[in-house]
Image (cartoon, rainbow, N blue to C red; front, side):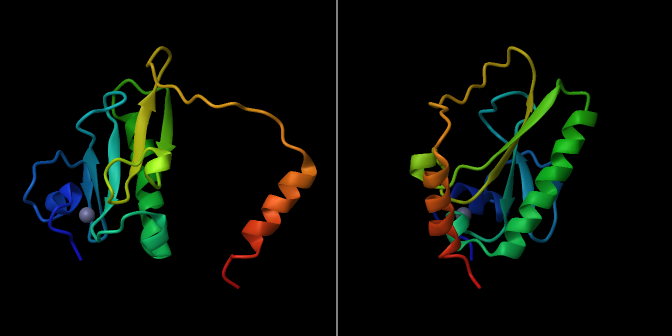
Length: 141
Ligand SMILES: [Zn+2]
């Protein structure tokens, strides 16, 4: 169900303004009001879910399907688009700012200013195996 103080729910209800390149009965694509690059859009579910943990997998799969479709459309749109990033921030620690799950899809090109900074370092196999086991242990059967 939509949530009263959620801006994306307000857009879904038609009570807040949005520029909408795509909509169906499960999701909407809306243009990001503060884009990384022109063409930056968000795919949002019509149902309110804070993040991936409370989003059903069928809706998640549909969000991805439409994100994929939007990425193709961006490349054909005439907007500057030499590449595409698809990005989802799940949780404040991952830089989620609007707590209604959304998939970012945005054009990339040389000099666009977008960066991801990290300390990339190869990890020992024994640690990778232990982490894989921890994840496997909690997957649904
Ligand atoms: Zn919402």
